[in-house]
Amino acid sequence: MSLYHNVVYLHCDNKTTDNNKQKHTIMKAIKIKNSIFEVTGERGDFFICKDSKGKVKMFAKKEVVVEDIDSMPKPKVYKTRKSAAKQLNPIEEVASKMMWINSCVYGDRTSMSYQISYDMMTGIELKAKELGNDFIASVCESVIKFMKCSEKQAYCLAKFVEENQISL
Image (cartoon, rainbow, N blue to C red; front, side):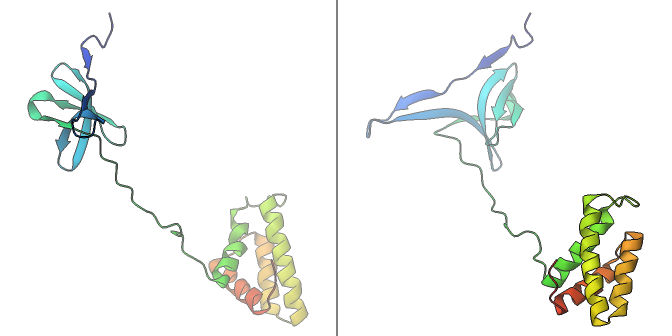
């Protein structure tokens, strides 16, 4: 015995208007607040309905009124901003690159993230030693040694990179 033996499906009626001889599809629908649900079937004392997104719902027959409509309204589309992410200034962008090393597993000096971070830090360290900036050189050594870069360290390094136009 089938589980769905009480299901009755409703079909849309095609009616022709006299004035322009076009066929319009008349659908059965339920309107609740600002939502319209297309009636797709019945089961016992309930209507089986589908909303504009395709979500199936059931409504008790005694609580709703079925109306005829020409077609389901199109769902509202809300536009999202394409640039939802905050645009970073050049120093913030470089600082976020400096903090890549934090995503490395501590002690795994063979990972690609560590190798990229190591190459960036050694380039900055060499430029700092060349210019005589011992503070930036020591920050680079510390970041390479401990495989961690705080936001403050990243900001100092980024500022140095931007001031000296070092390409990463």
